[in-house]
Image 1 (tube, rainbow, N blue to C red):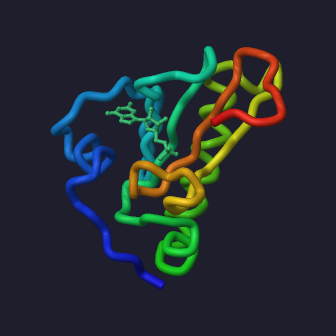
Image 2 (image 1 turned 45 degrees about the vertical axis):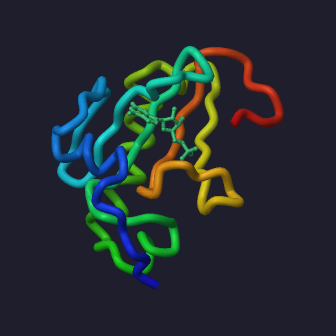
Image 3 (image 1 turned 90 degrees about the horizontal axis):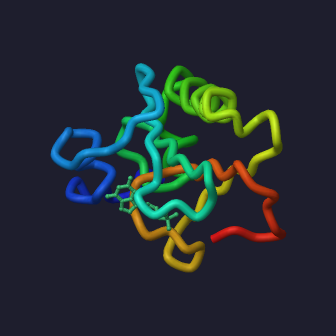
Length: 120
Ligand code: 5GP
């Protein structure tokens, strides 16, 4: 179901260029940038440009092009950062109880160090 979207969330403001971000890559439907408080040597956030809060929201409402672009961007970030040569982790927190602080769908890409059983 389409969830109400807060257009003032931090990632919405980054997408509009109102807040700066260190971009790793940008594609037609996705943006990847470094996390402001990295928990690993490589810690990149990948977001769809569309206004989606959760995976349910995204997979129910986004076009195949948006979904394909998002998944591909995650893989490209792993390659571009070198994370893929050493092993890495992708993680997505969803909902308050899932640890989601920013209500715009995002995937964390962690790498650059041996990763324990959990990270964030
Ligand atoms: P969540 O807990 O919602 O899965 O993760 C949100 C992430 O966004 C956190 O890792 C946090 O450090 C990051 N973050 C919060 N505000 C900003 C910001 O203004 N810029 C960037 N680049 N990252 C941010």
